[in-house]
Image 1 (cartoon, rainbow, N blue to C red):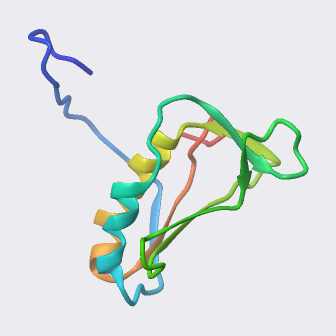
Image 2: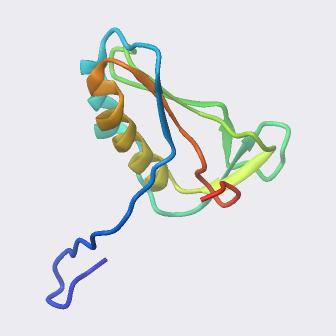
Length: 117
């Protein structure tokens, strides 16, 4: 969102991410590498099972840190769903700050067109 002076604007409000922290991550220090290297395009794509011919990104998709010590797995509870890599990047940033920095793994749900926002 751009402000009136064409700079970035921050709008305060209630933000309820659907995050659950669980388990442990042995090498959370490796997780920021995922944030720096993962795709973050804003174009909507169909994420789905290989059996779904509409799938542009076959699930499960795995994004690993450079040394493979931290992984992000993308999957769906449906045959397919539509979202952007940018929305996934935003969720990954939230998970990192809410969970990984406390040595925990986590799950961010309700993403995509069919997610219950």
